[in-house]
Image (tube, rainbow, N blue to C red):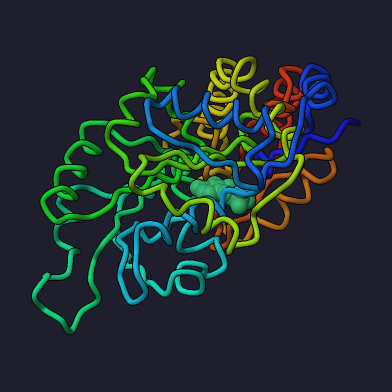
Length: 342
Ligand SMILES: *Cc1c(COP(=O)(O)O)cnc(C)c1O
């Protein structure tokens, strides 16, 4: 029985076409900015979002951390949702790398509002508090279950940032899932945000890489910051080629991941052992069992079928659909969910 791995959309392997693109890539030393394929990927993404510059990073965490560094000075404070990846899952990097604290907002499924941003800005003349200089949003949200922002709210947040002279960064690890789900234009995002990190190794299915895109002024020191973080890479065009291939061939199919997640959500909703299923907007399904104490038994049922999902603690379970989760696997998984008895 083939394994069905739904723990994350990072578990994918390159497709044949992507492997060909990797093998055929023209490369050079990217620390000298002489890797034509990296340069091409960076230009492609910057143009796609209508922004000035882009820089290829090994990981999404490093790209986000670099963005925080570019926007802040030590002792500053950034505003983010309490579930934000930059706060929860980057090893405390904001304080370690940039010496900044995070003001955590009690948002809805990982999303915050313009009013909440405004409330959480420390008064400029009150020197007892840290200086607020940056707002970090996530779209789609990870811990919030793939929720997507209403673009109108993002515009309002931009307005608050302008009024208070704050930078605005988007952790776009799964931004393409949102763009496909809501049929949005990347250029609209490019107009609003100062920096955006776009992950290539989640739904887009490459082995590694995240591109940080931004406007000239903010990106001025990006190469230096990446070097400081240890992220200068050499013939990394092989991986950039995978990114270009993904952008050309594997974006539209994200709609399939979104659809399958939605079908899983519906199936879960009608099972007696399931308590709440959070709204499914993209490729993440977060749900709770009716009895949290059944968790081990539930996970064991899945394990017997060679199916893996994530346990996020406190009875919260997570399923993430992705490129390597085929329709055949999907049909088998739905049947397994229907026959489980707890
Ligand atoms: C995966 C992810 C990242 C980047 O993670 P890396 O493992 O460092 O590439 C950043 N933000 C969010 C919301 C993510 O889901």
